[in-house]
Each structure stands twice: as C-alpha cells, then as structure tokens.
Amino acid sequence: MSAYAIAYEMQLWSNFTYFLDDALDGDQFEQQDERWIFGGRLDYRQASSLAGLSMVNRYGTELRYDAIDEVGLYRTRQRRRLGAVRSDQVDEWSAGFYWENQLGWTDRLRTVIGLRYDYFDFEVDGLVQRNIHGVDLGANSGAAHADKVALKGSVIYTFSPQWEAYLAAGQGLHSNDARGTTISVDPADGSAVDAVDPLVDSLGYEVGLRGFWHERLNTSVALWALHLDSELLFVGDAGNTEASRESRRRGVELTAYYRLSDEWTVDFEYAWTDARFTDSAPEGDEIPGAVEDVVQAGISADFAGGWFGGLRLRYFGERPLVEDDSVRSGDSTVVNLRAGYRAARWTLKMDVLNLLDSDDHDIDYYYTSRLPGEAAGGVEDVHYHVLEPRTVRVSASYLF
Image (cartoon, rainbow, N blue to C red; front, side, top):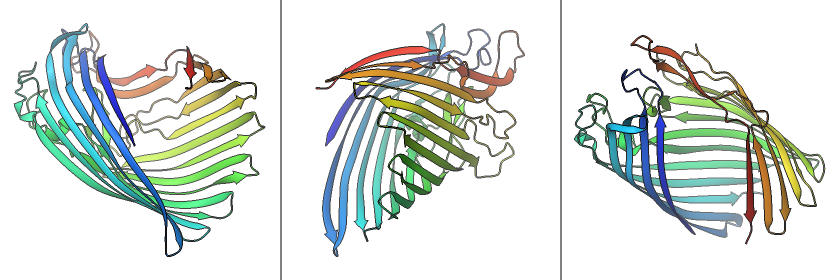
C-alpha cells in the first residue's frame, strides 16, 4: 500500500510565432498551472494452485485526484499579462481496478492474463467569462466522464534456464486534456468546436526472444506493433497539442548487455520504428516528430573500492516534420559522463551532461512564424531548440 501528495506550480512563457498574430505586442503567451495531486495504490498478491498447477493472482486498485486551482493561457508582453485567452479550475478524478493471473501450465509454459477497469471524471469551471478576444467562454465549462475496460495477455515459453520466448497482446488507453472534453467554443475566435474523446483506445502486440549467453551476455529482440485511435500532435502556432487521426506504429528493438569482467560492462540498444497515420489524406500519412532510429550505448564500471562510473551515448535519427515527409529534421547525438564514489551509507556522484558540448537540435518543428519586417502571412520554416550546453551536476545521497 502506498500514498502520495504533490504540490505543483508552473509558469511558462513561450513565443512560437513571434509577430504572426499580433504585429504590435507580439505573440508571447504564458501558461499557468497550479495544482495539488493526491493518490495511492493498494496491491494484494496471492499464491495458490489450480488443478495442481502453480498459480499466482494479483488484485489491486489505483486512485488519483488532481485539484487544479488554475490552469490558464494568457497573452503577454515582456512577461506582463495583457489578458486571458482561457483560465479554468479543474477537478479530475481517476480510479483503476485490476486483476492479474499467472498460471504455470508446465515447467516450460506459463501464461499471464490481466484485466483492468479505468474510470475518469472531469469537472471544468471557467475562471474567465469573456477573454481577451471578446469571446464568451461560459459554454466551455461543464463535466464529462468516461471508462474503459482493457484486457492483456502473454504466453511465455522457456527453452532452457537461459532462454525464453514470449507472445503478448493488450489493450490500453491515453487520456486527453480535461478542458478538451467539455469545450464547445474556440477561445481564439468564438467558432464552434467539437469536444475530444476523454479516453482514447490503443491496441498493441509484441513477440520476442530473450536470454543469457555464457553468463555474460544478456540479450533480447522484440517485434511489436501499436494502434492508436487518435494521435496527439503538437500545434506550433498555438503552443499546444490537438487530437488527430488514427495511427499505427510497428518496429523492432534489440538490446545487449555484456559483462567484460566483474567490474566492466558494455551495453547497446537499438530501436527502429515506422509510424504512420492509417487513413488516406491529401497531406500525407507521416506522423510529424515520430523518431525512426534510436541508439543508446555505453560502458560502465563498478569497482570494489567504492568507485563507479560510466560513459553513455544517445543517438536520435532523422524524423519527418510534416505529413508528406517533404521536410525532415537532422539527427542528434549526445554523450554523458558519470563518476561517483560509495562509502558506507553515502553516495557522491558527478554527471557531465553533453560532454562534447554538441549543438545538435534537441527538438525540431516546422510551422509558420513572422519576424518584424516580414510579410504579414509569415514564413514557413524549421524552428528548433539546441541541446543544453555542457553541464556539470554534483549530487550526494544518504541511505537511512
């Protein structure tokens, strides 16, 4: 059994489009989020047997409540508020109940079946009746709720004490912004808009092989696919996400961890993903921002005297920035270094992030923006954020 309480507050100023919408004051805006989060989990595990077969059942529940005093969007100039686009108070409840059954059919074959029920309740209360654009936002307040039942299952076959294969499939979900579940009026111009589904279904499959080789190599390979009923996409000129079309992803993941000696270990991970919208649309079927190739590799050491450390590399390949794949981002590589020392209950650690001080792009988007002096319609271009510069971080921890 566990429980938690979190106090959270954020103020974030952004300007994605510069002077596209407001040639005088600019397009800067502030996002405000102030909330308390309460939650907990209760889990019970019971070992038994069924017709002489080894069986383990697990039952549990998860609860969460977000008491959002204010979540708002404000037009600003030099971080001073000019007026609210939208500001709301939100109460969001969620509860999940699940059951998992593990059954050993033979010494080599076992199955895992899981069933989960989720319930979400959203209550949105507008704090601003009429916004900076003169739009009446009263109709956007309201309540919504939704629930989903998800079934998951796996079949695992053990070839030897070192090797096993598995086949898995399962349903899932992601939740949308509570404000989108009750919206009926666009805060930008007052036009009618449709509310989004509170919960979006997903369905995934995976088949894999994993095992050990000569007690030094731990490796696995997995083929997988995932279908989403609605994709969430970033909208550059609004600085938020919006629900989009159905999508499917499929890919392969490879991992290998090799112990060179009692002190030294090397590891390598590679993932390839093909992400597409499933419907046919004139703009294309590529999902903007979906990374195709990811590589992680590293070497680490843990010495008997208490010293430890590691060197890690992360590579993100090119990715489409528009649906027809006519514009793509560049790739990015970052190297991080860690060194530390353990003594009794103390651990001292130093991390050097972006060791090579790379200026590769951390993220890329493609949309329209306008600088002073440019045409009123703006210019379509790639907008990016470079990796954080070389950073040294020192930390200490004590175990009670």
